[in-house]
Amino acid sequence: MTESARRPRVRPARRPGRPAGGDAAVREALLGTARRLFLAHGFGSVTIRRIASEAGSSPATIHYHFGDKLGLYRAMLEAAFGPVAATLERLDDPERARDVDVASFMRLYARMLADNPWVPALIVQEVLAEGGRFRAQFIEQFAGRLVPLFVELVRREQRRGDLRADLDPRLAALSAISLTVFPFLALPVTSRVLGVSASGPALEQMVEHTTRLFREGAEARAGRERGSEA
Amino acid sequence: MTESARRPRVRPARRPGRPAGGDAAVREALLGTARRLFLAHGFGSVTIRRIASEAGSSPATIHYHFGDKLGLYRAMLEAAFGPVAATLERLDDPERARDVDVASFMRLYARMLADNPWVPALIVQEVLAEGGRFRAQFIEQFAGRLVPLFVELVRREQRRGDLRADLDPRLAALSAISLTVFPFLALPVTSRVLGVSASGPALEQMVEHTTRLFREGAEARAGRERGSEA
DNA sequence: ACGCATATTAATCGTTTGTTTAATTATGTG
DNA sequence: CACATAATTAAACAAACGATTAATATGCGT
Image 1 (cartoon, each protein chain N blue to C red):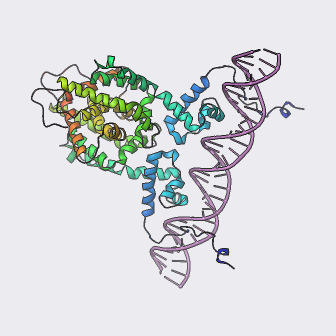
Image 2: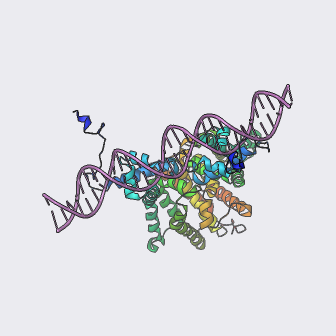
């Protein structure tokens, strides 16, 4: 009687049972692979088989840890937006928020985006895109607190006389955010057609350019006020 | 012999055969429905059954007109980006391009986005998003020609002495595009957290604010030059 | 009128999908 | 060292998917 009569024909790469290396690395691997694949192809175009396979696991393990595909997706979002939440926490502290201005805010925000390169991509795909599954939560948790904070900063600097009083604070805040965020969102295009980068010295150069353009475009100067925008 | 023995049990809403109203309206309906659904839910999450159903047609008709799901998708993109192509044509004409400046370019671009509200959404989902199926084509057809044109406009105004000579023309062009495009991309969020709109008088107000911020942030003024950004 | 080309659908095919179940192996505890 | 618990897999399921085919009805040139 040959060996193959008793054993399965092909020795599988991994057999059932609790693994020896007892830690939560499997969860992390699944979340990381899910982030990469959902980002690269979209929720509907990624199968849990593929996620499990590329994470060195199986579909049933996803079910065990996250319940279903949407559960894995939600857990991935929760983990991936962590750095954004951390940045917001730092600004909500009234102690620190006192001596922050629009320019330093723009710098802080740009560096967070540069340090976590999947965040711009997630914002594009899950917030800005129609049907993005994270839009409502993003507005509630982040945009709904961060954007008014930006507007308030502009108002404060207007009262101080640093920024033009005839600016609509909401439009000015929107412009500051545009100048800060869009270059990261457009990186896949601009890196090809402009050769720009958003890391290393090029990042600092870009942040410097951007904050200066906003500052000089919005600052109060003698004999410059026109009819109010608001 | 009863009638039901010869006929199908239920008279279907529509039976096979070439329809009476003989025109290409079916194609248009399919393209429009596809645009709406692909935009709302993403390529992978939309079934051709649903597109056909909501367009009042059948899956086989999609196969007849477009070959397969990807063929319908590509035809939809081709049709939807028509206005962008038209705008680019207007600017590539050397006759008209002579007396256009950065500000008027920003205005033109903003109005095109406002007039075709699905264009920003498509740019988000099919160009900026990772794995966007239109990215390469968009770069080749639009961004690759439009962005250098923007850079050239900045350079021209620098030579004229209208814009600061120490600006990096590529970063300045990027800022102009950021200020123009981002507000449309972010509309789903900003309309909720800022209450901004991008139509009617609010659009003109936004364009006016944006062009002025760029102009005054980038214009040449006495005693203002610093070390070159380039 | 006739007949070929055009446009449409119902029905169905083979896959692939997300999910579930049952079996299997390791860990931790008393 | 037994035994409950935790973590994993192979296998299988029903449902849904994209695609195809054959039938069918209209339009149109002759």
